[in-house]
Image 1 (cartoon, each protein chain N blue to C red):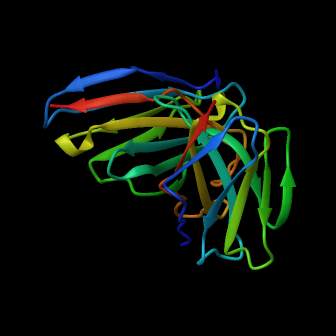
Image 2 (tube, chains in turn red, cyan; image 1 turned 180 degrees about the horizontal axis):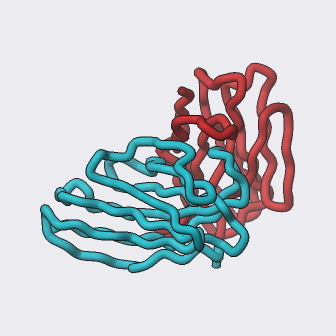
Length: 112
Length: 114
């Protein structure tokens, strides 16, 4: 079962692009990569999900190289409200998969 | 507001006791997931139910059990509580029966075992 490794923390200035990389060397063929955002004392909030190459939505982009052993969440022009913990997780989406692993998360601090 | 409701928000109980946490999923969602978040273990998946049936099981202790009722609300029962069970317990819901999918999380129940 794939597990993930992320940087523990990152700082960024307002208005900059932030890239958070997650390593998942043992990702399985059927695993998808999902990112969540969590504010203190709140439940995680889904950001984006992908399988390969690039996925973009109104909030973020997700870049996945061909070997899929890592992925990068890209947040364009961050604001103070983007200060949160970002979790990368991998797992198979299909019914019956036995587990889903959240990483330790990356604490992003956006500085004015 | 995610649309997922968890009660109670806070719970303080003694070791050895039993508690029940309740979750109401978003309207239309058939899957309910339970997670535990503690400082030392991070966010851990416990169990998933879909339309009343267990679909996936994660790191759930034998002292813990869950069920999903015909109205789709779910309960997580924690028994013989230990100090180490103190944590935030989240419920999430999704429309799909998949495990790794877009899920909507509630605000959590903070359990303190003393």
